[in-house]
Image (cartoon, rainbow, N blue to C red; front, side, top):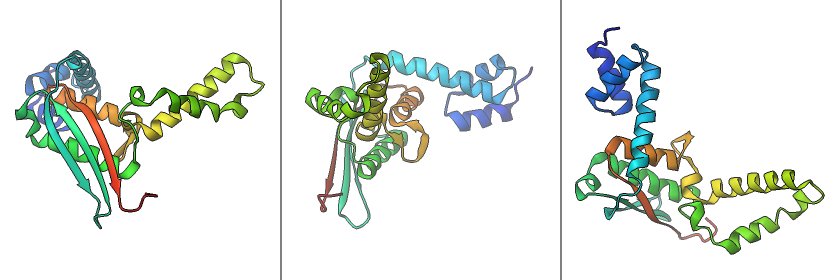
Length: 197
């Protein structure tokens, strides 16, 4: 099936992928826009995984100040080059993540950052829920409750505030695939005048 320029433009606008990649994906999918978008997404995630080991020493500190100036979300977002750190796409990602920090108050960037004593204390709160249950069921209950804990308190596990169909981690993976560099959140901070916020 012949791929039209209109199809290429439309899919490129949706995905942000390069013209040649879009054309190849459309040809591979026989003109099916949804399948071509899926092919590009899979290709992008593979590319992102390959970039994960690359050093990300550049970046930016982004601050989101909530209207009223009583709440601030801060994120340090790293990338590989100074050039990418100044691009509109990277700045927008950093701003969205700072807003996420202000809105949902994550305590850690990732699951790996949660101290062992905090996890142990959280598991202790599940004792009544698993009492008397077979070991395999108790283990699944604990894992399910820990997953919910991570989704609430770990930035990368949280649902993205602008599109709750994706996590912050998947948002970053998509940005890595689109931008072509490794991107890491190295630090987050949330400050508030009201300590209960």
